[in-house]
Length: 155
Length: 147
Image 1 (cartoon, helix red, strand yellow):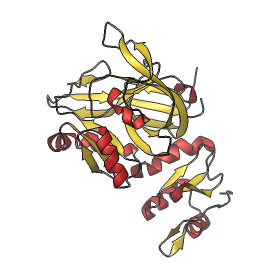
Image 2 (cartoon, rainbow over the protein chains, first blue to last red; image 1 turned 135 degrees about the vertical axis):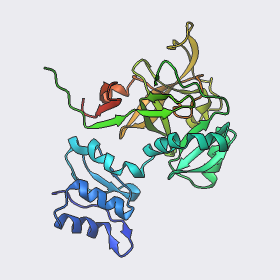
Image 3 (cartoon, chains in turn yellow, blue; image 1 turned 180 degrees about the horizontal axis):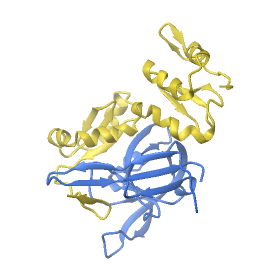
Image 4 (cartoon, rainbow over the protein chains, first blue to last red; image 1 turned 90 degrees about the vertical axis):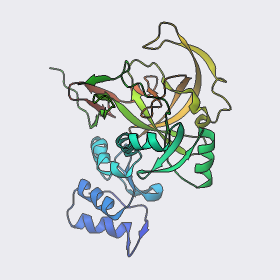
């Protein structure tokens, strides 16, 4: 890795700079390094150019990876992201329909962080609780029509 | 032989429904970015048949609107309907899609409620930024950010 480190984010007994330095010296690949960040619970993001951003979205390392590898490597960190909220909702839909019929819900970190009868009230709750980047959906009270023009059924 | 390369693959979402059947959808999660910077994640159905990204009408608060029907009235044809339905168009909505921040038009439209998608990811502006490979047999959506 030839990128330069720009930002620093402090974690217990270690800085991001030292962490990056330590894994770089160890000869880790970018993918392994990102997994290390995951293990430390550090949120990260790869820019389209391949720069590595770390929590607070300051640049952790410029030119961290080639641009063509960005999409693939982003998947390494998806477990932290909102993308998996959809997966969580889909897996727990039965329970959610039992507990929140007709409600708007906000999902954060694999749990329902807020629920309300309407979206405006939910947004107010999210604001009051300072909840960031929630995954929003509504759990219908009525039976869901699954077989639409857009989906098929496999028996 | 024509060859295209994609950097990422998104499996379709499959669900076991009450009848014991499995249904599958090509779903993607996008971030709607409000003017003040707040982000809300929304599940959308990947839809090459949608000219414009369309959201459920009752999501209007996320766009900072007082009601869903204050935009430019459009007539929109739907896949399942014989007659066009009303849609209201809003310009300059910011989304983060597959890691890219894009500003595009959005239609608000009344559509059936489904907890797993709140609208349709459509073509205007957004599709120009990506290349897509749609593999129905493998139930995968392949994406490149460098079309």
